[in-house]
Length: 181
Image 1 (cartoon, rainbow, N blue to C red):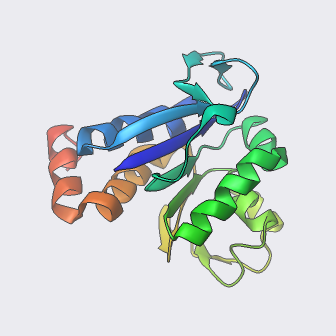
Image 2 (image 1 turned 180 degrees about the vertical axis):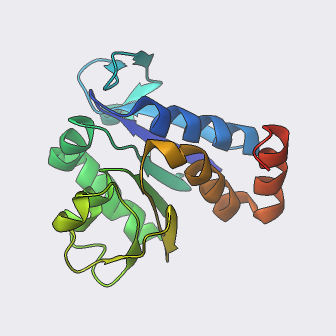
């Protein structure tokens, strides 16, 4: 299973890296992909992360999941990127899971992908998705879309994506190994 995690300057570090860590523990090949000109991407709290590749070099035909971390201005940069929007559209056509946490669900909402869908997002961002259904749950799944409230539920978000890709047993075992359960 190949998971692509998109990184833009101002991304929320925990939302990207905790999710990547959980998915790697599950057995996924995780690719950190910079949407910036450089491979080094700076998170919203100043932590520098070196991505594996640039989005311009990405071969996405074999992706099994796409992860959009929140954080500002990172989520806005993702939303403004033509390459990111094309990648999301491709993921939708392929029917692969798209995880969006915190502010990032607004990217999907802005693209019209969450109309009538159950979602979770950071409080205040639901205004950008008026036709979505905010359930109040920390993590929500509706078809291929996995959304989550924010940094505080990064672990649950990662475990839910792991469950969808590898099964409930794998997700439960990871939770036990990291003392979550």
